[in-house]
Length: 527
Image (cartoon, rainbow, N blue to C red; front, side):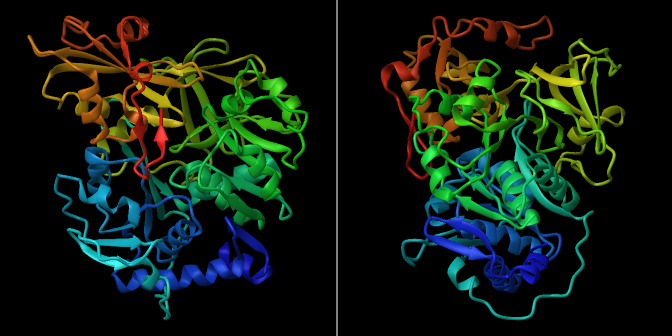
């Protein structure tokens, strides 16, 4: 598709970041040069290459260059560290990782063995100082300047193009094996839903290590032949200025972003922009209609996840229906509501588990990397089981109800309670813990760690969070810590988490009440 766009419109603007704009021809040239550089390191078809970079033009070029060689990109959430990061590197079996310089220390701090990793390709925006490493260190800028003939190879829509990690609920994060057809289907759906044309501008403020920014925005812009303007991150206070400055006509909001925008002081100028189509997943039902009127934008909701693309969406031709994700895209998917234990179909109006299967081959995930048991479990009875509960109304609209599994969603990030528990349980003063979601004031979830401590220990929650801060992403660090004599359990010894959730935050220590702050790997303070 990049080659086609370059032939049709070589000077057309494709990507912009800060003051730099690249045409389709510019991107194609940069991709070929970097791909040639990667080839000198031995990257070839089927290899896995990890990317740990902040939003930038170089990240997109890196992703495309990896796929140009028939290799598989493995984008890494830049907040990962410790055993979270170790698991992703080892599970993907990648020999190469391309990282911004600010994340080199985070990679080197991984204490466990990384047997597959051979090369560390470093993007140095602030100089070329030597960097100590356990691996061969290569300079990104040098690799980006390679000239040569790329190998002749055939890549099909059936080949895996990406492995994106989505947090598990009862175990470590799972790597979703995405064929090129799966990635393309997401992009085509976005183009169709938003009716994106070559004259549109798509503003991207979501992180490019997530599927939405990559496929719903960047790849969709490529397929439509339009421009994508990339910003480093989402900012509720700057979003409108970014929309105006970029000239955006379409964009996306995920998680609590719409709620954060709504909470900003209202102004008569809120509708003074060109963005008239917006994916908002979800758009809270309480503000759905007034949000559209205030910002003069048509919001489209979707139901989807990395594994299944976007099988349900609303229509640009219909008024927003508060609370509904939309209707099934029946040309591409079957979606059912089934009993979560028996898999038997349930009638409309009754809540059950949402299950999905494709009508077009190769457009859903092909499994979880290195986890055959998890793959079989997810695909039992030949339907993909989402782990989410929902219901259909009589008009065919799908309503998401809740999460069946113990997944936690914090400011747009899916968090595995299992992984957080594994870090908390490593703290010397803790004998047992359970981590659950509790409602956050702004929407999504806050994290509560319920802990049983060693007898006679003067337990200090601050020292526990100091321990967590060194070993997990900032967004996974619990906000609440509740010390308990014992955890509620079933007769078979399983922790009864719904009782812990029901207790809410009553009696729990709150890190925000004492001003405890956490930071991203890049240093930005987060409450």
